[in-house]
Amino acid sequence: MNLQVKRVGADLRYLGKQAKCVSIKVRYADFTTITRQFTLPQPTNIDQTIFQTGTELLQKAMTDNRLAIRLIGIGVSNLSEPGIQLSLMNGTDQRLEKLNRAVDRIRDKYGFTAIQTGRTMQLKSPH
Image (cartoon, rainbow, N blue to C red):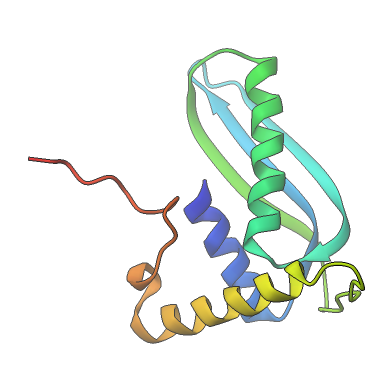
C-alpha cells in the first residue's frame, strides 16, 4: 500500500492539490469488497499522513473480517488548493512537505523507482 500512497501523494503535489478525505478499498478472498474512508481535520498532500490514515482504516477492516485479502487500494477525495495552517508548536508537516517535494523532483528526473523508502523496497531473494 505504501507505494500506492507515494503515487497518490506525488499526483496531488503535481496537480497542486490537497485532499481532505482518505479512503481504502479492500477485496477479500470471497470477492466481498468494502470501502472505508476518513475525513482529515486538515487537507494534506503529505505521503506519511495519507499512509498513516490508510493503515488505520486497513487495520480496522482487518479486525472486522478475518478472510484473506486479495486487493487493497487507496485513494483521496475532497480536493482543495494548498493552504497549510502553520503550526506554532510543530514544524513536522512543513519538513515532510519539503522532503516529499525533493523526492518528487528526483523521481521526475530519474524515474519513480530511483528513490524509495525502506517500506517500499521489495525484499530481494538471497538466491
